[in-house]
Image 1: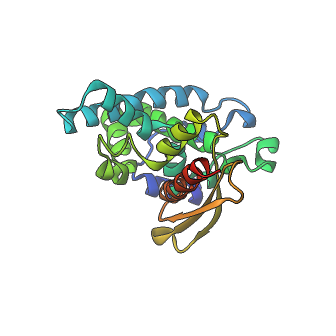
Image 2: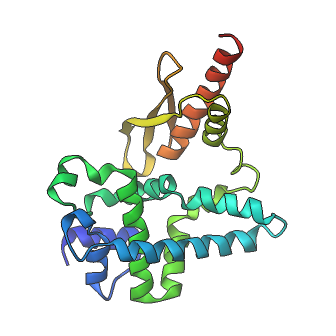
Image 3: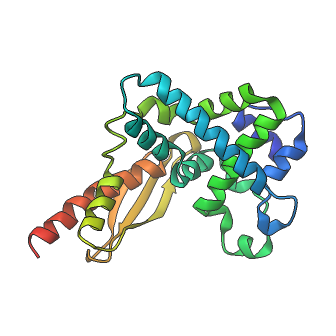
Amino acid sequence: MTRTLKNLYKRLDYQFSQAKLLETALTHRSAGSPNNERLEYLGDSILNFIIADVLYRRFTNASEGKLSRLRANLVNGNTLAEIARTLHLGEFIRLGPGELKSGGFRRDSILAGTMEAIIGAVYLDGGFQAGHDLVLKIYQDLLAEVSPDAAIKDPKTQLQEYLQSKKLSLPSYNVLSITGHDHAQMFSVECVIEELSAPVLGEGSSRRKAEQDAASKALELIMHVQVNP
């Protein structure tokens, strides 16, 4: 096992008995075969079940609709990519020359898929309990903050729904900078909307929080623009 993979084992707080499973989970299809597509499929299903189970047990009075929306917010690609970044997963992903050259190790879809593949690999290596423990570990902070009401009305959702209702262009989010040490990082993000004259800046201790901050500010601006054209 390389020193690099030892570092990942430590971050995951899991020791693989079948190291080949982790190697496959880290191999994008652009790097050849075997790759992580099948593990990604498996990990996606396991993740959805575990998060659904946690939400069902925690929010005993929440409706099926609220639980479904909560789960969707927690398991979507943006959230998984953010979790992958906290683990510095991009350092370990094996990519083909084209993806490597284009910065695929930073792409949300590749980070999210690799995270799901790792969940699948842990499940195959250590069983359901091992997969369950991993999901609870990597989702610890998000699950501590989750609320049936807040999850439905977060600023990014509000902004997207407002723009769609007005038939305006949807926003894009770009990370401008990441400062500070690993345990105390600060993200600076811009929210770009065609109808606004300039990007809107947001900051936060994670990419998600910075995007939410930018979305909240952008929503105020775009609503003002529409009311007073």
